[in-house]
Length: 207
Image (cartoon, rainbow, N blue to C red):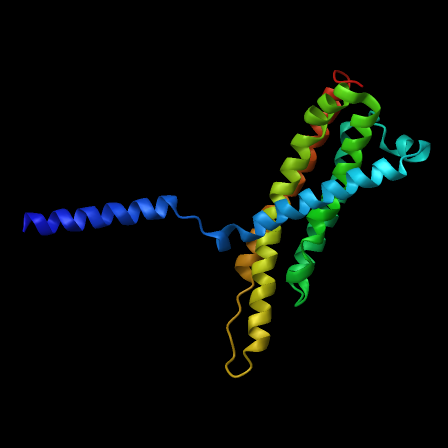
């Protein structure tokens, strides 16, 4: 009897270890793809600035001091527009295949800005990017990654419902709406945090 209990105990330990070490790619697939498409956008943005840089583009990219309110309004409009596009794609049957265009666009813009700072200000530009650019892009990308994951699930569910014409499938939109509202609040919080810290650090961190 004791030997049987020992075998059961060992099997349970093996199952626990397998759960800890196993990595479910499907669970994090949307987030991984978001990171990959963002990295692809970075490459495109950096290459674009290197080949198309001019005085007009540099004047648009040069950091300028603004009030917290104006920064918040500007950031929120841009971030919320991206968020709405991702949500809209979630309600489209074709949304799932093209939804990763959003992190690609963010990567392109970030690549252009980073290349401008590095090529024009060298080491100082890298430091400026690490303090004034990277943290906020990371926050935005994290929120959008979870939004993309949610919209991908919604889009795939809608596709499966349309394919299954024999039996009517139940579809509950309320869980998605609740999660979207929470992510929208995260978008607003990201814009506010970025505006506050950028306005405070701009007078200290200069290039």
